Length: 338
Ligand code: NAI
Image (cartoon, rainbow, N blue to C red):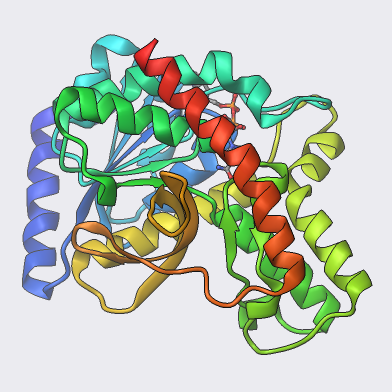
């Protein structure tokens, strides 16, 4: 039997008190789409995150089962489940961070844009909930096509009068995670030692790895550059095809989402020097949204970094990326204002 709400509440308070004495704050995090392929491993990893004191798991199916299962883990976070639209408000009220992996994933032969018709509406509804119940929360948007869903979320928040560009972040961490892994393979290094900035957006040619800015400094032959750029841009499709109809990346995505969410929470805590790539409102190019490195702090993406020096190959890639991105961003904006 699940514990009573009273027992649970007093347990939350006891743990919060403990944390206060230890000086470490606990954050309240909601995952929307928590019973899905990404949602479940993401929920498990967040349950293991010491920065999380309360974890709300919302979905339109199966969230009670996932919640009961995770609630038996002997980690600090208290887990609560929420099922269906009538419980969305309860899931969101009081949250510091909302992570959104709700929506359908790709099947072989599909582009991320093919998901637009279903996922645009889902993201709209969920963001209306965020605007109403936790307008100050940081939002990590995972649902594809990210290049359009982030502009959709921005328009929803603008209409509600709650928009703060610093708090809305499209999650592109998986592109960075893949880039680090594939570049490390080519260089014969441990991937943990490699850092590849990936800019632009999160679909096909809009995913632009800046191989000239890899740390540690290194150089690639034209063949290696082509191979790495293509593999990083098509990493998602590689997984979609291998899964052969059973969905897209879920485990590596959950890992990437937690890496990013943890960085956001450390920023919220006030840690210095937290820098990650994300798709955010931006003045780096003429486009209203663009992924670059951002510095995360108490109010979200507090600083958006410039691209830095690009080589000729990257400048050509940037032009292609911007063309596609402009259309995807516009599509999102039009969806809300039609
Ligand atoms: P999935 O189908 O396994 O899970 C999606 C979950 O969302 C399901 O549990 C479903 O019930 C739930 N859902 C559907 N409508 C909902 C609503 N209105 N409210 C709340 N929950 C709702 O899909 P998966 O594999 O977890 O992927 C989720 C999304 O993440 C897809 O759009 C996918 O394309 C995207 N994705 C994004 C990546 C990125 O790098 N940003 C990488 C991989 C996937």
